Image (cartoon, rainbow, N blue to C red; front, side, top):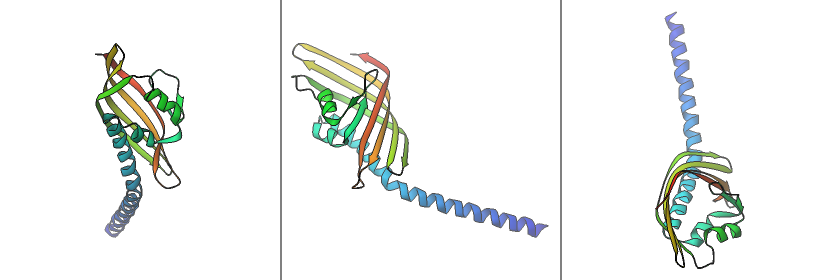
Length: 165
């Protein structure tokens, strides 16, 4: 009877070892993509903090879509450019932009992140000037391109709290 339990224990250890090896293999397979997604996320934040329009828009697919809180979706890089960087003499300054990725999942050629955000910005056009501080939850979908790089495909966010400053 003791031999039976010993063989069972060895079998269980074997299964755990095989399972662990498979999980490590899967983890190694996705690590490169996860690193790339996290870098795009950081480049996006850095682009806003440095007001780098080309860097921000360069992270988007041509047919990308954004959906700001309580607004109709905006589709296509040119329409997003017109929304984020209007050529009307206005200036939007990002004073603070902090994010924390709380979920990242890579599935073959699609990846999704959910992150919290704190965004402090000011807007000025002529004599109009105001600012906002927004705390939100953001969901971003990334697609792997044919050259194996990743781009932002869809992004939507909602404000948990927003206050005019």
